Image 1 (tube, helix red, strand yellow):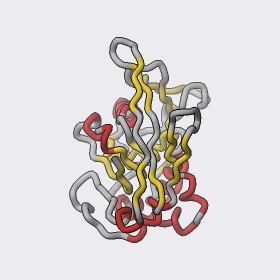
Image 2 (cartoon, helix red, strand yellow):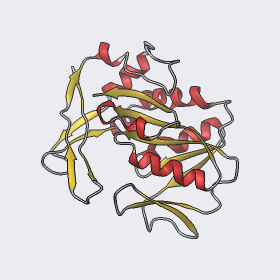
Image 3 (cartoon, helix red, strand yellow):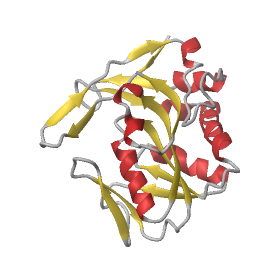
Length: 221
């Protein structure tokens, strides 16, 4: 048995009160993990791929991190075994290589773990989407929904008619991915798809993205 966990998300509601949504970490076995794959379309539903099981097994739970009451889903175990990292990158590359993707945007911070390598393998440029005051030069920014935080990118990183994918480690409520989509679209890019390692299905984040497809490797409730 191994553990797949989820993490706590805190967001501002419209009346500025805070609410928390806490999900319990769950135990799943290798046979269940092998079938945990979902794509932006239905083409990969039910794929029995041993790579998915290895990726899911590398995701570990850290209860009480970064503070009591939070169970943090950590994908860094994927990088402890080169073959598992290769599995994850391979699944993304197989989906996007030869599809005309010209830009891979990675969301700070864990999106940076995957996005540059995917970009290199598919022959696209990598563009970091960062928290405020992390990038020099002229910037474009977009405020996260109901909050005071922002994501930023450098002006000139995106060219009109770029075909972009957005990469992060996890999709939960979908707020950060939605902001990233709007930031890229305002710069003239076409966002082809959002790609994540893990999806927390119960939070229905993909619904917030509307017509933008979402491709994930491992899904959990």
